[in-house]
Length: 155
Image 1 (cartoon, rainbow, N blue to C red):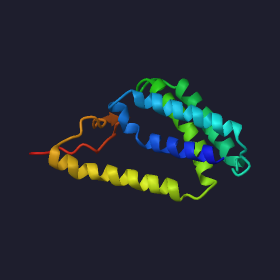
Image 2: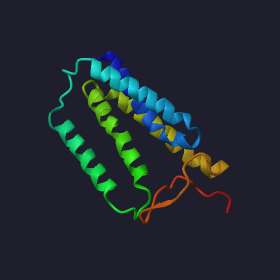
Image 3: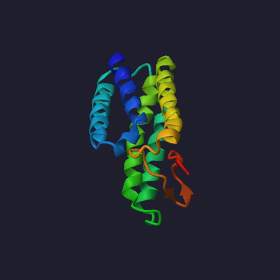
Image 4: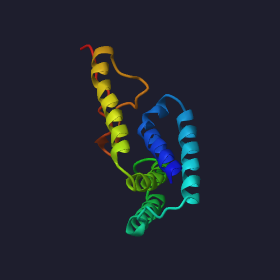
């Protein structure tokens, strides 16, 4: 179970760096590879420490339901394949959370704290040096503003 927890923490960290998709397509390869190794290790190790009962059932039900609704809805808000890919990519994150929750939450919280600290540092950096062009651009999705990370500088 120790290997699975270490791989789960690595997957969790890689999920946090999803913004790298604009920097390099190798991010998806790295995430997919580590995720596949994690799921293989998870399926081979004993999972007696993890309480699966209603959480897994509910997660699977919601994933199937959302997939069904997305596939059979109209394309009013764009290509449904993008949303389906994101939904299916987040499902393993639920398994990762269950694995990490079976132990102390200190390490994942530390990783999350460091990530948010570094992300918060980008705001003053953008204010002083300008927009970070490999961040996702400000845009609109389904009528709502999507990103507020880019700060205009030098007015």
